[in-house]
Length: 145
Image (cartoon, rainbow, N blue to C red; front, side):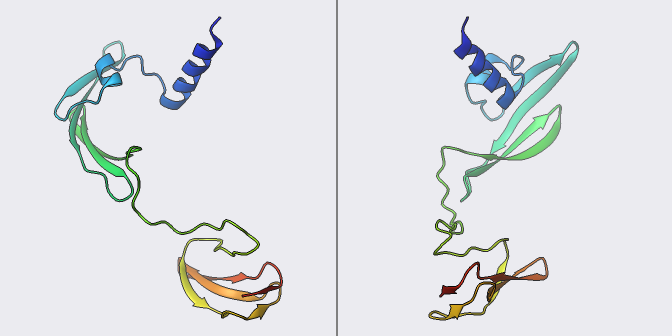
C-alpha cells in the first residue's frame, strides 16, 4: 500500500539495525553529557548507557566519545559529518594517461628518472618502500617524463 514507506523502513533497518527499543528522546535528540539512558533488549535484560565525554573534532573530523555501558567505560572514534576535514590527503590520479600513481601506500625511496627523460614501456620510474620492502613502479607505456 505504501511502497516508499516500506522501502525507507527497510533501508533504515539495514543501516541502523533494530532501534525500536531506543528511548524516543535519545533517538531524535542528542543525549547530553552525564545523562544515562536504559535500553531494554529482551525480557529482563536492560543496558544502561551513560554519556561521559565528547571531544572536539580533530583535523580529520573525528570525535572521541567516552561512555559507560553497564558501568564499564568504552571509548570510540566517531566521524562528525558536519565538520569539513582540514587534513591534507594525497592527490589521487585523475587522468591515467598523463599521471602515474603509486600502486600501494609507502615512502618514496628514490626517483629513477628526471624531467625530459624518455622511458620505454616497463622501464623503472621510481621506487616505493613499504613494510621494509621495495617496489619498483614501471612505465605502463612508452612515455616522456
